[in-house]
Length: 169
Image 1 (cartoon, rainbow, N blue to C red):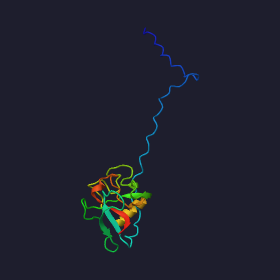
Image 2: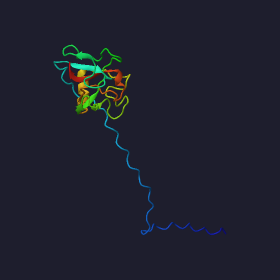
Image 3: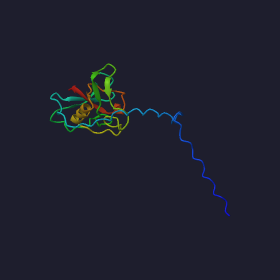
Image 4: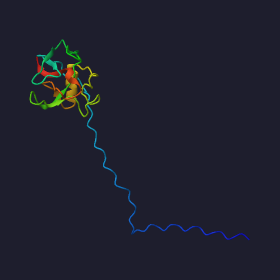
């Protein structure tokens, strides 16, 4: 006759409510949020003011900077270049608290990162050509305004480009 069947293996005991349940290690904190991206303008702004505006050398040391071109209303609305070095005019923006000639307080050539994505006019030599009105609009859409000076040494390679200002001619 065949041997008797073996008994089934014992089942594991139910978990005891008195024993702590195994824990997984604590999760690491979530990464810091990335800086806000550069905001693109939503609508155009007024054209060049009646007195015109200065375009200055991007490497000007202080004050209003060395004038490269004076943009005039009715003549220069489509202008994106000026006759100096890397001719495409770069957009740089400033906070309202900007202080010309005093350490360039409030100067910004990029938002977040000093690269093609964060630079307001792209990273040189790939500077994005913008008109004066487009420059004003992109600054405003980021809560800023055109600077009253060059933001020399503040990034994006704009020292070799002419830059827009809000200074009358």
